[in-house]
Length: 96
View: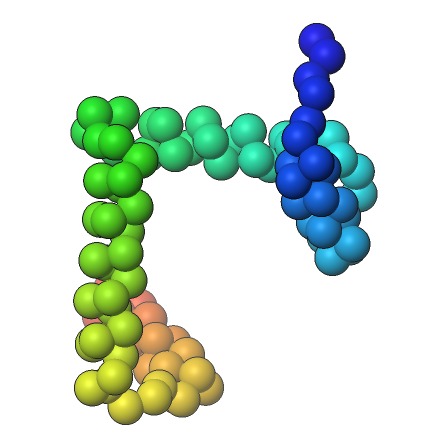
């Protein structure tokens, strides 16, 4: 199969390669195609949504998360992990 890319598509791939995250243009395209497949299969109703509807839905979810985060104090990562580990220990102790 032979594919002709637009200049913009080529620039996009080159920009991804410059980040150092990808080793080749083929790898960039492989990831893009895998994500497209996940997008198509993510939810049973997703195929029924237009791209605009899906994008609006995602934006609404992001806006809701941002709104919640504006009223929630920051979480200390170490304290969060310590709390999770403590809960695991407590559950383990009740199972022994």
